[in-house]
Length: 275
Image (cartoon, rainbow, N blue to C red; front, top):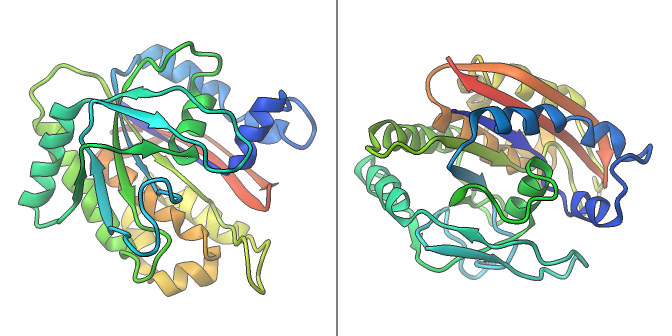
């Protein structure tokens, strides 16, 4: 049905928990989501295929897969130590997960398949933004994790190819479910080191301007380039690039929002439809 992309910084969850959505600091970011919420009400997806990065709930530096796909019947949120409330659990769609995994392996990717997986703020916060006040999540979840933490990281080109493999799987799926693709993370930010607080509006707008019409333009930069341009945590743009690949060959932008900073992060919201 389409794709939406959003930042997932834990501070967003704190703002929701405190009810700060309309305060001057947070309002410019939260103002980007009513259109996404309206769109989701219009298209009523049944399943969400979400590209994100794990922050230590499932994997740590001693065991960090490049790509991991959840194939579980359910996914629980767990405490990460950010002071956030526990969020609602998700129902999974194991059949679609395995269909995607088989396509990935057929395209010579080697994902770690997870029949048990926890979800952290990288997934829960984007759903709190999309479905505020929901008693339960109205979609089933297929989570796809990308390593954006432990070098060597996958290249932007590889992540786009991964997303395109997922698109092939979705296109060949025989079910009648309405599917939404989600990419979470970023945009430019660096949380530590000499460049702590670094943001790069020029690079962020380059990504926003090209991800719909020419996603291959984002693959011209190496991982070292992306770290230089977007910061060490700004490499979460890999999640967006993979999600864009899963949308399909053509993408049409119907909404965007960009604001900096929130919690030392350049934050954005983007909504695309295929074709």
